[in-house]
Amino acid sequence: MSSPHDLVRAHGPFPARYLNLASGDGILVIDVQAAMEAILAADGSSTIAAEAGAAELQMDRVKRPSAARQLYARLRGCDQWEHCPHGYTTVMSLSAAAPQRIGPFVVRAPWHEAPAEGVDIIIQPGLSFGLGTHATTRIPLRQLADVTKPGMRCADVGCGSGILAIAMSRLGAREVVAVDVDHTAVLEALDNVQRAGVANLVSSISLGSADALFGSFDVIAANMGGAPSVIQIAQDVAAHLEPGGVFLASGIYGDTDDAAGQVADGVSEALSQFGLAEVRRDSEHQCVGIVYRRNR
Image 1 (cartoon, rainbow, N blue to C red):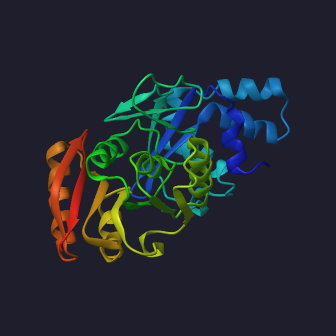
Image 2: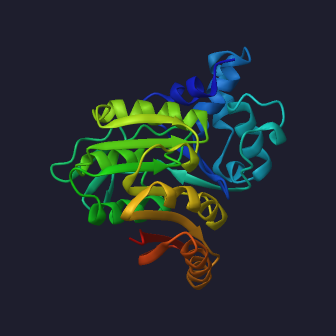
């Protein structure tokens, strides 16, 4: 069977729909129809049978956790759900996204036309999170536009598609380092950085988390999959921030806006022990992103 990286590339330039699986570990976006076609083809089905099988996977079926887990396991090359590298639990479907205007940025897929104005970011939809369609990405993109200055050294922890790393480079960062615990995310971020033409600025994209960073940074951004993940990396983030440097922490959730705010309060209290003080908070759709500054 083809590798998961090959499977997600099989759809060509116009994916019809996506599968979005989210948990405390992150969010995964899959082109469902293309994935099913590729899996069926790899199993020896004819093209006609593969297309018919893919067409049977309707949106209501995609929403079922059992079907989504089976598909994800196949894409990851796992024989069982429990053996997959992440424990994704909740499922929802996404339509193919139009270009997203987020602060000064326009985030688009390769098949969309280049914008007449705005900072252009091209992202190939794949297995890694970061298409600009979710609040956890939109919030730090807007924040980055206000805190990233030319000449800064920046890092993207949990880089996913590489969207924040690309944004930092577009804003004038002299160097960007990116890390992710998912090997597929590393591969896809590499592809997107090369596609964006900023490989000379994004000097390193490697497997790991905040403890794998090297040197000190003016800005560190982390679009994480929940408050525990933010707290887990905070000490390593603080250790790699310049005095007065900023940490953008996104992906802090709650069932309601008020609940998300309460969770964010707890995160800020936890991060204060590492010398990280909250200076800004933005929220959207039960998601909070916080800007922290390291005490001088």
